[in-house]
Amino acid sequence: MQTFEQVYKEKLKKQLEQFLDNPIIVSSDISYDPLIEDANAIVAVIKTGIGQASSRNDYDLIQTTFTVNFILDANNTQLLLGALTSLIWNYNGKWDTLTLNVWNVLIDKLQEKPYIFKPVFTTPVPVGGINKVKSATKTIDAVNVMFNISVSYSSNVDLKPDDFTLIIDDAPFPIRAVRYDMASAPAYEPINDLGEQFSTQELFSENIVFTFRLLKSLPGVDALQDILSDEFFGNDFLSGKDLKLKRGNKEVEVQLTSLQEIYEAGTKIMLLTLSRW
Image (cartoon, rainbow, N blue to C red; front, side, top):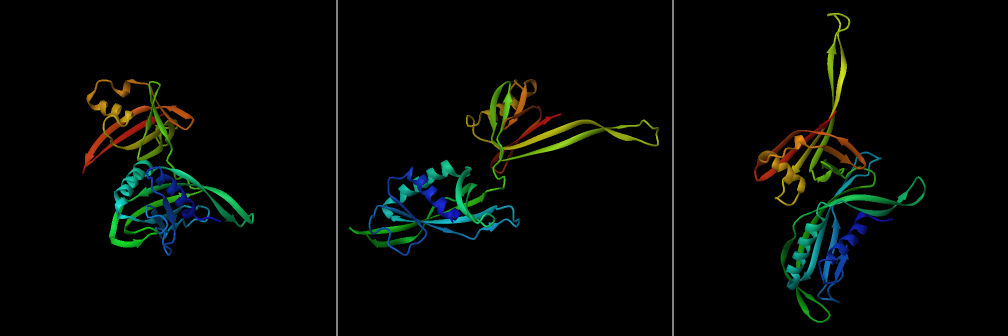
């Protein structure tokens, strides 16, 4: 049987090795002297904090935090901080998967279960002072760098947001939203076939409304946002174009109903509302 921590720390090690030439030792225990054999190594001691599981038996959503304590030669501090900056830039908030061997009591044997998860990192920070540590060849000045990782993971909860694409005149543009919602809004009209005393309603249309909230990026980063920004000060309006919304392998024709750009407290947000009927 395996824990999420066991499998994830090996994945974390491989990710860090992309940005560091120093050997990396990943451990859950610091009771030994890991720098004795190689003073140039970087030790990552990973501890799992208290996690919170779902209260539903059939949902295995778990939220937890890992604390990573790096121990290394003080001369390598900036190398590690630079590597962690690259780690954050490449993997923070990125959906990933791993597989655990979990004991299933219903079939009385180990079962492979794929888990989906998304790590969210804190910025690394050196803590404490310098400690003298003996290696096989010399005494080094060792420092500690702390780093936290918050993770939500599950094998059966639909955590990952869907991928949407707005197709404008046959040109596809991914919608990178931080939030989206879909709502069905049927419209009725009153009818009165039985006189003034009795009236009924008849379905007039079925309106499906899609709302996307996007964090505004700098020009040139997101092609769709560049097009949406031109809606306010340009002359080539989306209302005159053929619009389709795609999710997975399904595609529907839509009409642009509203677009807002909001600036408040240092953040720009775009609200894109599309509808179909």
